[in-house]
Image (cartoon, rainbow, N blue to C red; front, side):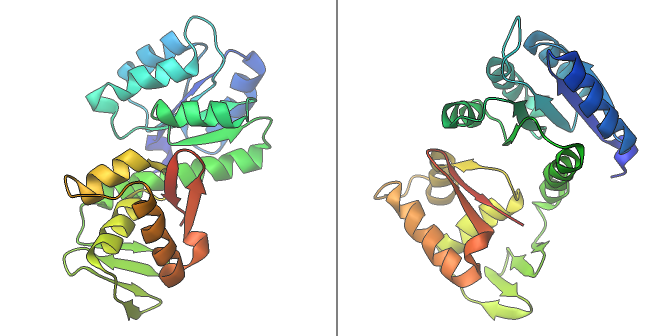
Amino acid sequence: MKKKDIKILLVDDEPDILEIVGYNLSAEGYEVIKGENGLEAIDLAKKHKPHLIILDVMMPKMDGIEACERIRELPELSETIITFLTARGEDYSQVAGFDAGADDYIAKPIKPKVLISKVKALLRRLKHSENSGDAILTIGDLVIFKEEYKITIKGKETALPRKEFELLSLLATKPGKVFKRDEILDKVWGNEVVVGGRTIDVHIRKLREKIGDTSFKTVKGVGYKFVD
């Protein structure tokens, strides 16, 4: 997908943020739509169906958390990536954002080059999402053969037990996305008997030993994500 075809919805009640961030995103080649509050975010999201939404948390009329929750209820925007851009970098705000359905969190102030790099990383998920149904998923040196239940790392085949393989496949479909513990348990273990959240921790530890510690990041109080 070309940059000019990618729509980014930027919503913030600070004119300077809209101008500076909007300018840098436009200069990079993206189509940028702007809004000033949560209510506008919902209306603009419905109208334009953006690929990425960047939301401030503290806004008039409706805050970003509630706007995110409302947007996540819209089936046509289920694949839209949502990240928060806010000065509130406390753990509470981050957890609240993830609980509302956000994919990531960007603390401001942020340098334009860093912001663009972050946006590019977020948009890479679009490609992974489009290819998530493919039988073969390639991420750097890692290749996942879904139908064969095997992986290779730098061309070398590595055997994984079924649940480790399914957990890796889930996280790798959307690198960078934080998967909540409940979501992981539901999609990997389903109705099977599970000891508890500790089960996920053990499987992640084993995957780190086999694939690399830096490939998985723990988001405290929320869940895990795969880092490509």
